[in-house]
Length: 201
Image 1 (cartoon, one colour):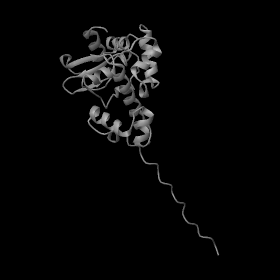
Image 2 (image 1 turned 60 degrees about the horizontal axis):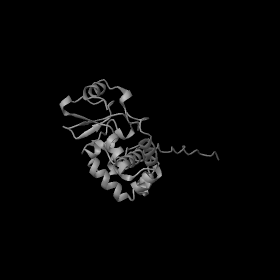
Image 3 (image 1 turned 180 degrees about the vertical axis):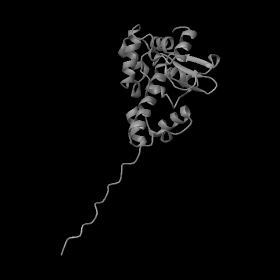
């Protein structure tokens, strides 16, 4: 990762090339954002940078509801330099840890589970399970924003074991249930009844 000054300057400039590369956490609010977030730039002393959303969440920060960091491109700054981690991320994004274990994932990659965890800690500052959870949250938030699916179906499609588990995670992360984060879409316009025509006698 680049030094703090370079990251902070990119954040201050709202540089879109950093979107998905770093995530910006603000100590005074407990929220983490994308570097392109339109909110007022906090003081440097109150800012921390993370290489992944999962790392920011593991650090105790919750996602910004304004810039929606769960929609940021999933492309760490080191992408292209660690083939094993790249392959692991693709498999996790495809749901490898929704039902399977880290041991099974590592076996598919031809490495040991401990070695895989060390690579994730080195490059993402998070464990494979934390990354998987972050991706499930991202999927669920997208479904809540764009569909009217019942919570049980949202949970299943996002990779959660149940709607209850989905609710627990959202309450812990956002401080509110998933239903409270669902975007309200305008109701479809009511069909107009054509005026009754009298038939001449």
